[in-house]
Image (cartoon, rainbow, N blue to C red; front, side):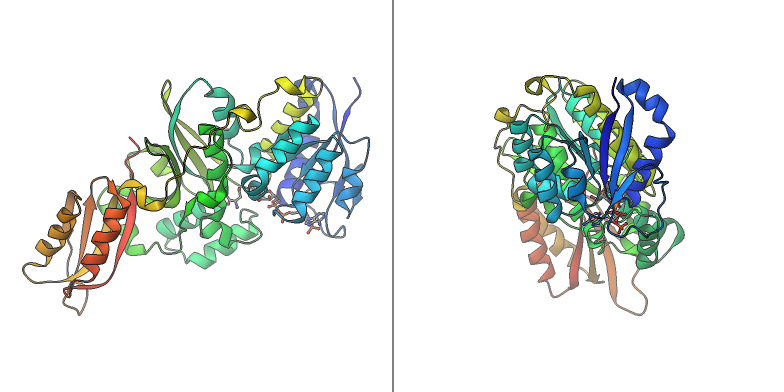
Length: 436
Ligand code: NDP
Ligand code: HSE
């Protein structure tokens, strides 16, 4: 059979890794795909740059449209990133009846609804396995492997850079920005690293996961995001003393009232496997009504782990080239006309347990005031610990672990406790999930 010609737009970390994997494993890949896959053209901004891949035999260009407009190319791999000019490139490729493979989560989270609608009109596939959790085939697992289940919730460490930073800070006492710089040098971080540390990248990924898990449209604007920048060393240490780890999680949960979509630092019991996922590794825990909990683990970023997912998508597309477009696996797991607009809950409606840390004056009645306020807001306390006084000061740190409560009640209780004259400064609040 005639080889399939593909074009790769972007030859950085992921594009370079993709070229390497496609070239190194060409023979096995052809045996799997049923046809040889040839990288006919590739594009980068600066062709004089040194690459991590060998581009011998590939026609190079600085203009992505040379690839998009090439009638010989059947699959376009978009590996640039961003959601501006790249959206036009992807729509242009679709309009030219090209299949698209992308690793771009911001593009899918922000414009996926429109892109998939156009792709369906043109009868082409837009594949995006690499957009979530790097090399872990989590899209395929949920979309195909778990398609018989009603998925109740999922929770994941879905940003490699963030997990790498938290792990290095905890295990080696390293400085936040020093580790971030290393993550950038290793090619893990986004072009704008605030996306990694402020939870935006995880929010993009959660948007995609929730859509394929629950059959809802992509809606990034409704995701609550909180990053890792406010996690303190004290909280990490106190949490560990209490048998918890602090991980940055993306959580999507179906409730009777709607769907919770939230990204934030979370205390999780250290006995859970996911609490022990360190470094650039990601893990996603998915709870289906039939299967129960399932856990997916692997590298969340980096050249070849991500290329693994990109190449798998390319092979999938090649296998489907001759299939009936009407009868392919739907882009978002559910048939496009069967997506439901289930309400996404505002943060005040979230239900979760909490870790609270406050600094209180060391005198009788202070804790009684705090517990009275919590009780007035129907918040039950699981444990309360008063630590040694802080150096040279009359304040004592107090840690409270609560049971599951409505966030709205917690917000009100925190405001009242902070207003007590015996409580100093702001309360540090971290959500807690047992993931049982
Ligand atoms: P890089 O910055 O390493 O690579 C981007 C590439 O795009 C570069 O080769 C750059 O060219 C090229 N490029 C930029 N603008 C243009 C343009 N206008 N025309 C042609 N080429 C252009 O990014 P990554 O490889 O890290 O990320 C790519 C995508 O993959 C992003 O969407 C990212 O979110 C996603 N992703 C990244 C992962 C990772 O571990 N890095 C993991 C999973 C997903 P030049 O080299 O000449 O500057
Ligand atoms: N910047 C992302 C991360 C890349 O660190 O997880 C993988 O999507």
